[in-house]
Image 1 (cartoon, rainbow over the protein chains, first blue to last red):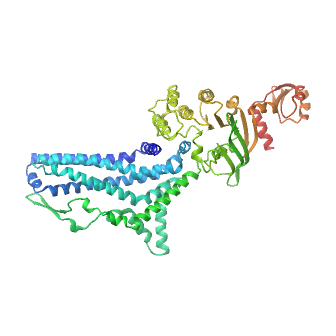
Image 2: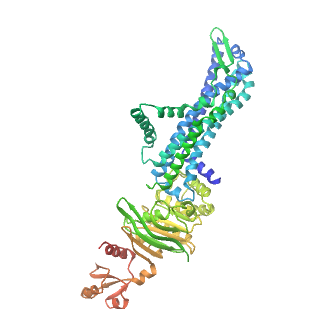
Image 3: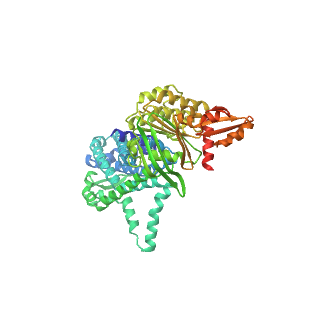
Length: 311
Length: 285
């Protein structure tokens, strides 16, 4: 246990981008939110032609809570996208860099098995980085809640301040769920990237991308079909439709408001937790097949690191 | 005395070239063994086989285990310094201590810190910022603080200036080595480690051409400087090598009774470097 902790810590020391990128994006969202709030306040003071008070008081607690969740869900999705990018580059680099600078000879001089070493990299990508992202999201969403809540208070309504805490809890839980299912779904991709990183002598990115493209081309030319391409697309973007309910019939809340300058007509669901659909994902062969393929790639990466000798 | 390493019939081919060709040797506890050979002779391959870093044919036991199958258990008791470049450049000195502390059960952090405090290395520096000599000092500090039974050094002082090189071996001998420890070191700068070795192995083109303790080297090989008029007498005794120095012929003999040589001139113990050259030439012939 202590070994794993040290190994994961070492990954975070070496690859600082995997923690800094989510932090930077989280900070960016807070900053944009702050500037927007200041802008709204300034317009209100200078011009006074927007009826901010009227706009906000057209919301009740339920609608305000749902809107907060909706806004923060956008933040969560952006953070997850950033996370997937940096994690992919991290996985491609982690077993390649140590061979390139020969520091693998130092790591191999320590009494730690290759399974544990490669395992620590998978653990970093699949657990440590998502946890960092979740923590960043929580900090950012609390900050944005305070900023937005106080702005609304300035406009004369406490509805956001009041609805916030429950909405924050719900959106955080939904985000944790999204991170978990997304990570499980991407395990075969993570395994593939680790394998390429352990195997490739140079141009890791090319080796990660070219084989799938080649398989796709060969299938198209030889069989005239595109099953592999569909499989890949499903793997890249297919998890959210499976793990969340998109039933528009559930969007029972409506926010409508009309005055001389503003026109609002939105329909949305009450809360994110209502959209969660774990059963369908857990029953899908894609999830379990993907995990099995990921395990195969992982084992191959361990074998590569153990026996590849190019130092 | 127990046998730490037992190698029998080690072979390793790269393409059609033999890096190791049926090599057998034992290493006993408490010895300092020099593995000496020209570049490309198979030194590094032999060490890599020993550390389980490369596959090979033949049988090999390190502390009773096969390094191919039980690599990470073997590494509990074996330390390894490859050359100056292998410590990761992004790591800070303090983090290097944390890492080894967290990963090696036989690491004594306070020992390493005590050793580092005698150097100019600062704990917040990144390894990439340290000089080559300092990186070697750091690696040595880490390794000396591990209660290991076998220390493997592969050209550990390559590219260092003379002060660091001297210091390196002095520290190793004074602060690390004792009867329970064993050191296996490869180098091509023979003169530098000659005085600390207890055993010597010469390797050339994948074959062992000499495997002796330093004591028996002194018994087996003698060198004598002969006046030119006695040179033919010396040649009749079948010398291993003949060189000229300051107007005298210098002959080296292997397994020739010392009484017969004494008649030719002043007998002395040959240097390892000269012996090495003579044996490699003999092997090449």
